[in-house]
Amino acid sequence: MKDIYKQDELAIPEGVKVNIKSRQVTVEGPRGVLTKNLRHLAIEITVLENKIRFVVHHGLRKHVACIRTVRSLINNMIVGVTKGFQYKMRYVYAHFPIN
Image 1: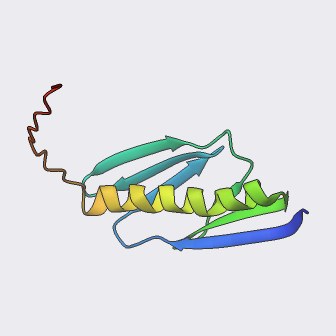
Image 2: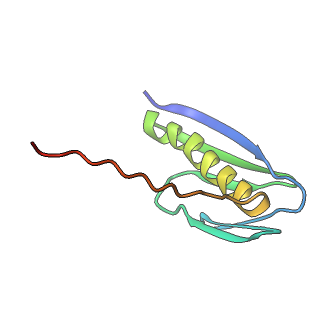
């Protein structure tokens, strides 16, 4: 069954600039610039003053589920340009003999 109209919003923090042109999302912040291509998804993405709005018209269940996915992707991009990500690599050795 199709949903007629679904929307979700994401707040943009201060110091972060979001530019969306034909579903090509660019996020600029103090730690750099990240770009993500979302042209394969049928979602209307608009930037308001300090919010990003995601809208799906006449979408099936999978299209409506993409709203939350896109919202999470852009939120992770915002976290990446403000706080940054740091991964620590651990070296683990385990020997399992065949016999």
